[in-house]
Image (cartoon, rainbow, N blue to C red; front, side, top):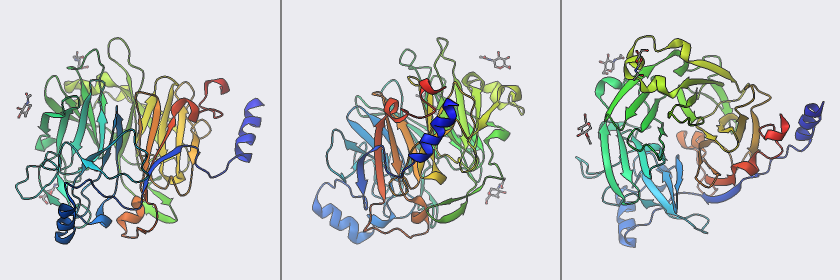
Length: 409
Ligand SMILES: *[C@@H]1O[C@H](CO)[C@@H](O)[C@H](O)[C@H]1NC(C)=O
Ligand SMILES: *[C@@H]1O[C@H](CO)[C@@H](O)[C@H](O)[C@H]1NC(C)=O
Ligand SMILES: *[C@@H]1O[C@H](CO)[C@@H](O)[C@H](O)[C@H]1NC(C)=O
């Protein structure tokens, strides 16, 4: 009964205004150029084409907010960038990371450290992990500049630690590497694993920092759900075929084992597998990778498509982007997962069109990036309007009054 009243109250109060704080917003992206002449030159030579720059990934570390700009079209000056925090500007310019020199892909062969990245993550040992897809102009005329690689920076010294080129036999023709999630503990920095999702050909590439080695794992749960491929975003109907995409790491136990939750983008179901299964190379490489260890968790229900997700150990809640709902969802892992327990914590048809990345920082804040990608792909952006946003809120505040809050179940 209490639950019924609660849901009714939620429905009555469902208003479409942003609860999260809009931290930054941009009409188009610009950079902190070494000088005005550099900018003018880049504009005149097509090295900087503002309309081809879209932000995609976000991550916060101390006083740096990393934002990525994939090289999906020509004229992206730098793919990996940061904004200095604190920052009270509405539309700050992006600073290439680690430097302008290491961000430019010209001339060929390139000296760039990162050619094109979508999402990045900082681990518990102050290292920034980047998955470089290595391709320029992906949407119009793809040009492979370097092979895909995992790139790791030491953030305290701003130095490159490692650039691990993924072995060719772990990549497929349709490989698309949108996300990287790091399994690390500050008590065990050497024994860190990265999970790179291959949404294009339905696999996860596991990289062991200790072994400096990667392996690929296939599973039927990494595929799309053919009955859930179509969805509409901002009045545009899409069918996307992106497989395994979002990963959230559960509570870390003393033996460094934890649950690894995951889902495909073109699907609404959530699955889980022990991290030790993915970390066991021989097990992962076997043709039947521990089928019993992969389990279905539940289903977010109609329109529950999500890009990335993140687990907050303080609230027991997984937060995920809700692409087809212009919103952010939550699910408390102590409850069964279904369309009634996976609820929205925020929704806004303008500020949260295409929420494509979500991260949790060390201070307990959720960062979300939204970017109108659907319009960008169709070259239908209106650059007089605000197209890109980064919004932020305290995780514990965000779930207040929702079914994810511990007092409600
Ligand atoms: C991958 O692409 C290459 C070159 O286009 C082609 O020869 C090969 O048959 C393709 N492999 C698969 C598995 O589709
Ligand atoms: C890691 O492995 C790659 C390729 O196998 C090799 O080129 C590189 O030198 C290795 N790095 C370290 C730090 O061992
Ligand atoms: C990996 O899995 C295999 C097969 O289940 C098992 O025999 C082996 O002990 C595991 N290795 C580790 C390091 O856990």
